[in-house]
Image (cartoon, rainbow, N blue to C red; front, side, top):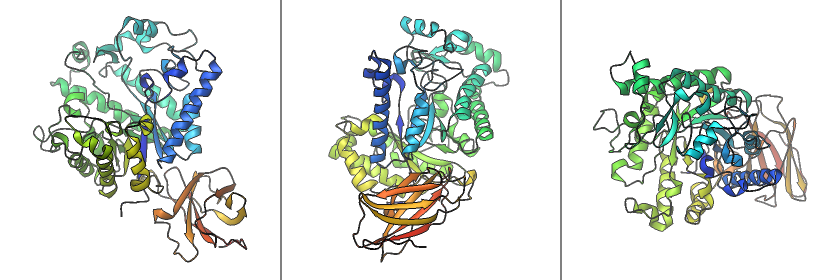
Length: 511
């Protein structure tokens, strides 16, 4: 059975250079309120599409380049909101995103790029970084130029500068402390450099690397210290907030390290980005890891199932969940190296990968890169298959036992009534402040009531106070049904069920 009840299903919403949201078109609107309205509607549409695909989480980019999609005391407002770095957009995008995601009962993980300062080094970029509006926090490019270097033809922070590391953590923690996020998410840009544009950190190494003979070991230690300190800070502030990283898919190749994977990737994170991602899992610094496994099942250099299985072996026995990052953007796109993405419009490859995730022990979820590809013409056949065959029912987010296992109190006094729109189900909260949302299951009257079967899960409903109400607009039988309602907390621990029976002629309260 591939249809399972617990599986994280997510997508990344990229804001850098307006990839997914907000649209570049919205930045051209002269009327600020028109811009705000369009941006809000665009985001609601993205979240609605996530719901239609039966996702339960989004990873929302809030710091693409040392700028902010939230009201920050550390970072200037992102230029991707208004066209001008530091200009107040007139609303709080992160707060709006959280409200809208939670309204749809989607987890929202705030996604940070820790070290990137800009996407290029053009003179116009220098001027923008140097001249933010007076009411805005200044750019780190101006406030601390001694932390800034050039790598991959971009301005970046030098991860070897201890003060820069602390500043990065400060910017993340103001989100943890001030917003109702479900997780903190870092992408794969740590020591990000290219052969034609390497990071020149010789002076930094000379100043801070005395304890290390090897510069690579020093670089890896710099990143691990940041990850470890941030992990401690998050857990001390809000223990329910999850902390995860989405690195490039390969830690090390087996030819370079016996502990590595049977792959021949050109850019292992350990060797090229100086991120010891495997060790972070072994030390349980993370709550989840979401490696970007953007290769087909038959791509020999990095085979999807081989590298995913390797990661599953790494998390085995550890208090860390494994979600697989997937290349939705490749579906239906011609590639001489990976022709698999064109077979049956790419539906075969992405479908088989998703099925592999569902049936493989140790894989707790799938995350699709990225949101705007849901409506890309080349991808539409695949999303249709996903909805119809791969994810035909809802799924709950897997709970993390190390974050608590006590479920909330069950709902009380559930009852059903016939309404003009369908069957109205009402219940009362079990007087438990830990309740965040409810799961609703539906059964035929002659059917065994088993909430472990995902085929019976028909809705999740965010808590709205003491009195709860939900309407089943498409009841599966006109003769009568049984409904089960459970309560779930932030960690998706589920209560015992409360039952209510509905009959077409005589609605009754039950159990």
